Image 1 (spheres, rainbow, N blue to C red):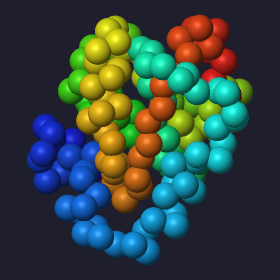
Image 2 (image 1 turned 135 degrees about the horizontal axis):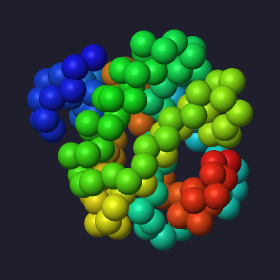
Image 3 (image 1 turned 120 degrees about the vertical axis):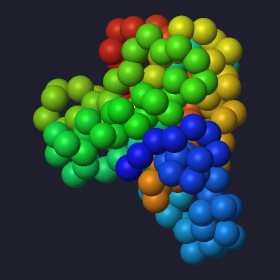
Image 4 (image 1 turned 180 degrees about the vertical axis):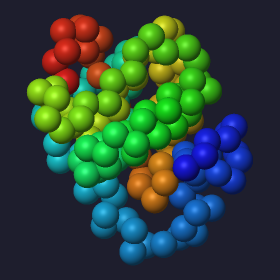
Length: 147
């Protein structure tokens, strides 16, 4: 998967309307692809924070494979850096002992970049997966509380 600048045909954060048209058959799979059911009530931040969680980027199987993991990590890093500087990017892998496997945690240097990221990734896709972004409380992230 190559990553190009926003709007490029190979950008993994594609507009779903362009990629699938109105494909209603994809809608029932949205929640499953985004791992929304894994978010505990009250775990996300109700107000913007510098930490954004991206859901639905990768499966556990993809994260187990070193080559795929590195490709996903680099794609995501390049994708989110389009919105601003990041101070930390965490993609927990199965077997590492970290919570939040299947999620991507991005801490931006500035709040504005995190807000731009969530706006810019609304209705976005990574590969064939719909992604969703939510804000994560910075204090929980700093303590590595990823659930």
